[in-house]
Structures are given as C-alpha cells and as structure tokens.
Image (tube, rainbow, N blue to C red; front, side):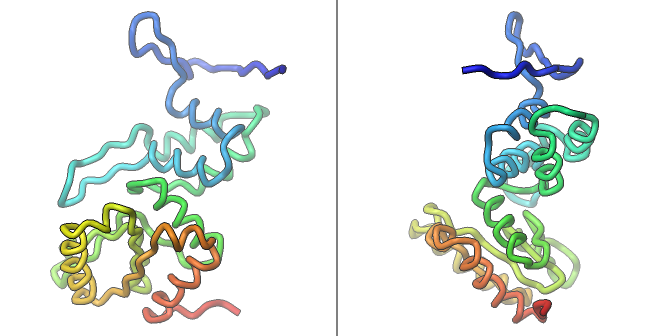
Length: 206
C-alpha cells in the first residue's frame, strides 16, 4: 500500500507536551476531508467550531473559530481533499450539541427547506430567551428537537412535557425527530419538518 506525503505548513504541527507532536485541530479536520463522508466531516467540523453561552448548562468555547477554519481552508492550494473541504466548511455552523443534530440539519438542507439555526433561542415578549431549540427557523417560527434515547426516561419526559407547553405558549411549531425517523431517510424527515414550516406560513417553491 502506498500513501502520499502531506506538505505541512508552519502552525500545522503543535507540541502540547514535550516529545509529542500532533497536527493542529484545523489541519486535522482538513486531513479528514480525504477519508470521511461529507456528513461525518461536517459533524466533526461543527463540533470544532461550536460555541455557546446559554442560560443553562456550561458555556462552551470553540476549539477553532469558524472564521479561522474558513481562512485556513481558503489558503490551501492543490492538496488532496481541498474540494471536499471547501464545500464542507461552508456547511459548518456553530452551536451544535451532537453529531445527530448536524446530520439532521444537513437532511433538511438537502431537501430544500429553509435554513435552521442550531441552538436557536425562543424569545418571550420582552426578548428574553425562554427555550433553546436544537434547531430553529425564526422566520417561520418552527423548531426541531432531536429525541435521543435519554428522552425515554420518566424524568426527561416530564421535563420535555413542560418544555413543549412553553414552546406552544411562545407561538412556535415544534417538530420532534427520533432516531427511527432518521433511519427512514432525509426525505421522510424533511416531509415531517415541512408540515411544521407550513403551519408557520412557509410556502414551498414550485
């Protein structure tokens, strides 16, 4: 088996500990463009650039700022994986909490639905965030929640019920997507979310 040698630039190699050399997060993500399928590459990139300071949980700082990763990719020329990386970096969004949310967002985009923002705040009449949706489309007041296995516990179901009431009180249309929905494919998921968007006034083109 033969591979190819990678031309590394200054700054591509870090030494976090004496005697240990690793590629930088940006370089590592770029190198993955040659081996990962696009959805997995976007999910990895979302994790690197995601940052949030919500009213619950712990604040999170990005490993690499999105604009820095975009600049890093833009500066590369004539290296394997560059086309995939340039396409993928434009799909990255900050605020994502899980790979499933990245995959879900890509499914919606693939099927021509409006843009959904990760960690979207749902505001009350005073402009204060009351609920943070996994994905939200403020224009059509539609939010999407990914229901993973932890949502099956009795305690989490009670929290979800109270949260669902808040979402309705705020005038948003909520769509819940499960792992079973995801397994049925992007067209199924998009059709489910489209019903919520239409309640919010969205009119599909064509």
